[in-house]
Amino acid sequence: NPVDQPQPDPKKKTLVVLGTGWGSVSLLKKLDTENYNVVVVSPRNYFLFTPLLPSCTVGTIEHRSIMEPIRNFLRHKKAAVKYYEAEATKIDYEKRLVYINDESPIKGDVSQTQIPFDMLVVGVGAENATFGIPGVREHGLFLKEVGDAQAIRNRIMDCCETATFKDQSEEERQRLLHMVVVGGGPTGVEFAGELQDFFHSDLKKWIPEIKEKFHVTLVEALPNVLPMFSKQLIDYTEKTFAEETIDIRTKTMVKNVTDKYIEAESTGPDGKKQLERIPYGLLVWATGNAMRPLVKDLINQIPAQKDSRRGLAVNEYLVVKGADNVWAVGDCAVANYAPTAQVAAQEGAFLARMFNQMAKSEEIEAKLAELSDVQEKASSKEARNQAFDEIKDLQKRLRRMKGVNPFEYSHQGSLAYIGSEKAVADISWFSGNIASGGTITYFFWRSAYLSMCFSTRNRILVLMDWVKAKVFGRDVSRV
Ligand code: FAD
Ligand code: NAD
Image 1 (cartoon, rainbow, N blue to C red):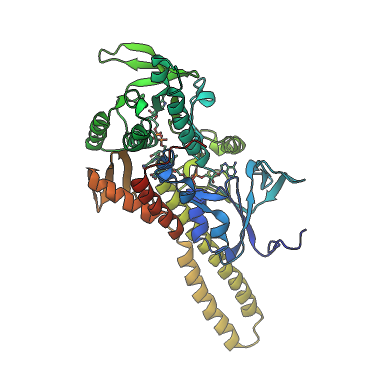
Image 2 (image 1 turned 60 degrees about the vertical axis):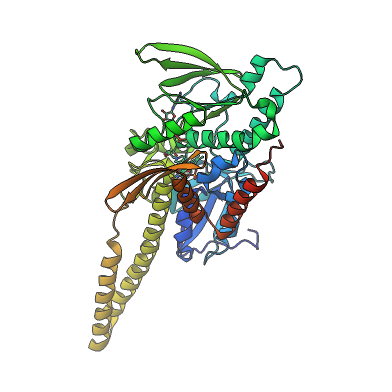
């Protein structure tokens, strides 16, 4: 074993945490790492503040401003935490092993190995849903990771520059400047809003030739966008989009994607279905989540999970049903809550509190065993009585510790940016709900997300990006 690597303490249990997203990082933040040998495995060596990712697609915010290196934050933990930049490729539940692969471009002599665990937290999130629609993976761009946002930013610029290429036909110009977003959930809506902002404030100034043809269309299969928001805010969003000249095509389901057009089936007011071809230059696919193969494979190993379709079914303590000592948080877990950062963060924090208590209870149990031994072997009545009193005290503490309440999600509300310096918010207020949309809500949205950023460093960087974009405009270079 390399001498410079701290060895696991054989007296402590090994807790393996998969992922460095909202769920896992929120767990690691609150976890007392002195209680366990903590090992973190994730292909992403940073935490990503996803709520501001749509802003990175157009350069309102630079991506590094919303990334926090995992090393930076782990080094402040009380006890050392081991981090491996790798993808968990298989969890062997019976053998209590996680198989990991280094999938990064640089590989050493060893790039595949395994980690034994006593306790495992699965926080690997989800992948993009495509519903098996042909052509999506080949021609569409997703919006989940930093690389996706960069690819979108480049593609927007490429389309604009290619549209203005010498002798380009009108029809081709129109196609290239047609930006299609599929999925009217918050990801699709926020991206469409950001894109339209980019066009209004910067693109049309820098490249006036595209002014007449640049167009954003949002395609949604359901009768309206943002189904999780209240009716009033759905109407407000649709009205704002109409004013911003973003076309919303509801009741339109994409069935096929080629490199230059999508085929979508729309339902008219008379209920008649019609298949049409919609040419595009940029296609952003934002139709929600699907299970990762790692999660599917674990589900197949556990008989109690045979009916799980959307992720790992967990109980009220976030234990994966049918699997002792395995917990799941965030988008890969199904606990009857929406797959949001808010839920994942609360689940992670809950697990940290529970693990901290479990460690304390185990410590007390060990002490109790020691004391009952002392009591048995005590030679004087006085020593026996003293041990008895201490045991009673500890038993009381233990009972208090073991009374951990189950996980309960507390919904703080939903927020989304819709472009033109407007946002919508459904905020839980005492037992009621406040729905608001507009410019004041936009300032609330900005301050709420700024305060939620991972670190002060992130907060300052985001603030500086906002000022920079306002003063100098967004950068339109393609890299
Ligand atoms: P993630 O945050 O996705 O993290 C998963 C982690 O697992 C990553 O570190 C990943 O690298 C790692 N991983 C993946 N595969 C493996 C593997 N095989 N082995 C090990 N590690 C692995 N929610 C809100 O509440 N509010 C918002 O405003 C909001 N905005 C969003 C905007 C966008 C553009 C997107 C895409 C999502 C947004 N969400 C928002 C949803 C929110 O980001 C997710 O619900 C949240 O990220 C889920 O957290 P998680 O920890 O489950 O997964
Ligand atoms: P989503 O699941 O919320 O929405 C996807 C939409 O795509 C659905 O409305 C669905 O009807 C539509 N769709 C699916 N297939 C289609 C097809 N073939 N053609 C046309 N439309 C199709 O997905 P999302 O927006 O990526 O959000 C994922 C999760 O992240 C959600 O839980 C969401 O709440 C959360 N999130 C929250 C925020 C926020 O709070 N601001 C922002 C982004 C994401």
